[in-house]
Image (tube, rainbow, N blue to C red; front, side, top):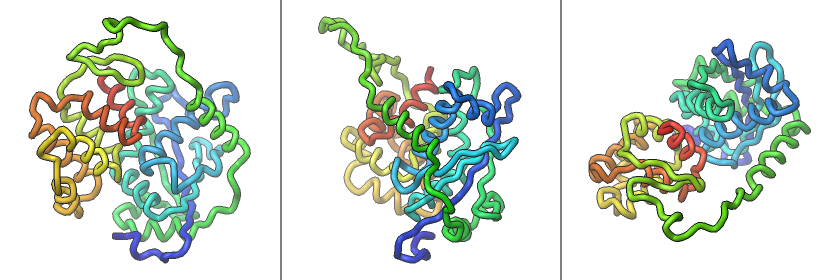
Length: 291
């Protein structure tokens, strides 16, 4: 694995991701310059994309989002080589593009997914040219040490996100037991009821692109009710498809679940497993795809 070649001491590095919308109706840079609501929405899109692609909230921080006309530049400091590696794998597989597109579509209320052009740099090195050489990309990021602390504006936006996350949901009037029951052909997610359905090939692809290193945890949750994923099945999948990478491991996991469960391999079961693993953002994407 690439991370074994890096020094065992404290590991830090810096990369800048440049973003540009390919839709003439959406200008990410202009939206971010909007001090009212645009700035916060674009920052939330970036933050959710990093959570998806880096496997959570830890191991990195956004230092600055700046004007690199026509691009929007996002400077990210990594403090964990494993997290940085997962981000690079997500970027290389196209998962970062997909997350950016899906979150933009949802938060900007677009009628179709947003096509985004990206470029990833570490200092003067364009990492897009070397994505097949993971160790080299990690080395370039490691050598590109951050030159600044977190920007005050980023700190303010992070606080706004935390406040939004902690804000209590609006409570609906007390309902009767009959009203609170969810029909057998539906499932409940974030206090809303959705029609359940069998998982599709598009679901498998979306899951595989977004779940990253968390695929094992999701598999173990699914394994509580799926015999095919019990015991050593998850570790066997990891070993069998180690060379193919995280995408293929996740793809094979969900494919095996569908094959074993047949008509009972429902979206609701997967969304519940993602919730249990605190992968709410990915669950939201899959539900949005359904809608």
